[in-house]
Amino acid sequence: MGDNNAHGEHNTPQPARKLTAVVVPLLALIAVVVGLIVAWTSLNTEVGWFAYAPLSNTTFTGNGVAMVSQGTQIGLTVTVLGLLVLAFWAGLAVGRRR
Image (cartoon, rainbow, N blue to C red; front, side, top):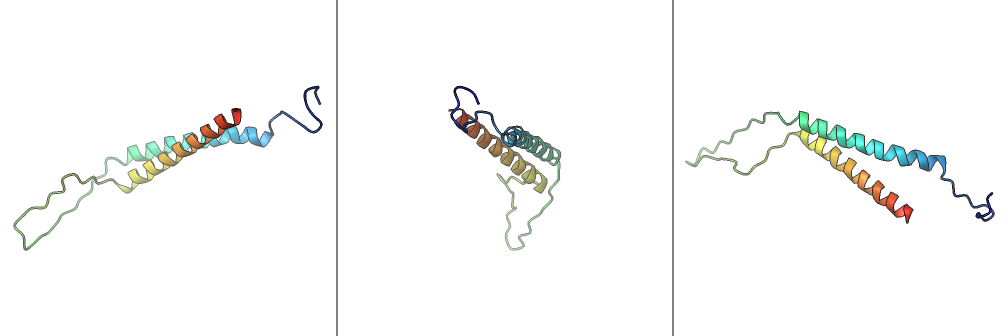
């Protein structure tokens, strides 16, 4: 015990808190990178579809329709979740300092 500490008061962080302070942002950063890699590698997928309208004389065109593959959706979801965890961890770290 030091001169500035009251009985039973400790200023040293616990080992588990130190470990989570390193592991959580590292895992979130890994999730962001993996999500971006998955989204980037599945961008070149071809989506084929056709529309058949036998009673109309008009041709259907899908202007403004964005077709995104399932791999791209999963990759972007993992990226967003990783960024949310990083933002939460950064807010928690800033809040603890004050």
